[in-house]
Image 1: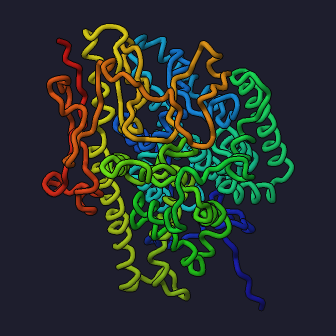
Image 2: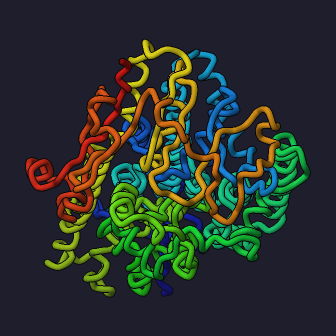
Image 3: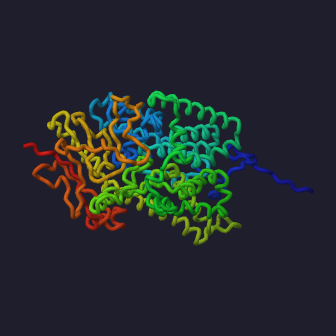
Length: 608
């Protein structure tokens, strides 16, 4: 008599038997008393949106400006479009046309209504744009978290969500007005769509991230784009091609409207940096390990774990290959590519970002005391925006490694056995994650509290409108911490730079009399050569003066109290004389006691 075996009828919740990609259904299940299976619920939308929304709001309202490139190449052109005043860099000269006005216009969609709503309160317009950036980050990161949850389960998604919310790199990058931040949003969204198997949308978002954001980020999008094309070639190709052609045509058209000549800022930027059309080495070079150090500063041990993702693949191949491998691979591609580039714009005297440059080749021509002062005053923390596009992927990779801790010790012949080492590894997961998040929050708190003085000091100007219309704000070596014209009240006639020994090319105001955005002023060049028009010669014309006073053996302009009255003074962390551990991480009580602080001051001229 033949024996027959009855097979269970498939349930609606069962996964397809031939599914090529690991999903949460392949995870070892919990055993219930009756031998049934407990289905794991995906992480819904509410928790990611709420958590990210809260943290991005905090970032928008407390984040400092980490790079003068953000101010002079993005906030200032936006201010000019809104208020017809602002500083211009040589990249926005129509002769060079390296910057896209399409990217600026995208933010004007929020800035313009905000300027109508808040009238003369430009500070609120500034924060309205930042809140918009935070909203973009919330939306794109939430899609990524939900996609991870549906594909790989709640635990990996929850770990990733925690790191996206609290790591220093994501906290700062999420509300930075930079093309690399826009590419970061696109990376999160494209990766989420890819995991949700919406391949056409993933390719379309990738094209937008490259063209509307940062052209060089194309390398970070390649794995998702290629795999999407392999899975759904026709739909993905058409979506990517349509998006690329539309945005490129729109970019050229918008550039023509502002530069008044037919040109492509996207192509110009690529030619300048890659093909050899410019001399980007003028703005500082660093060694191949620069970005590794920088990423560790922003993710601490989370970055180390992210690099170990490749190491756990032999153990976790079934879980993560090919889906998560495709999503995480840009971390390695991007780090390798960027480390091979000599132009890294170190934030020493030559720190001031992408191609703006100042000072870099002329350090040795400065007097010894001024050189020391400039080196100290331009040393800002390493929040290198070149790495921004892969920040969310670092969180995903690190979270995947933490989630896989028990797999390292689990018996492959009995995956559900709870040996001591497996149990210990499970307990270790939240401990390691908590350590990373505590260290990140400590660093975030240290940077925000140690370096927030410039923005806060400029806000004081709105309370001194009795100085009268046409007042002049003067800034010397602190020009690179200028928080933008959004913090300059309307009664201020102009902001001028003072000569403190710098010999690089500084930004100058947009000149409406010679064409504004379409002008090609003769004082701009791409050789980092100073213009004789960039400094105010008559210091007596200054109404207000901004200076950072550190404990150094040389005088400052503001020290002459017969001419200047201090009206605001806030502490500013003195990096050179503060121990690395205590200046990098906020440790209660010790942070105030062990670190050394200067005073960021706003002076008002005493009129006799």
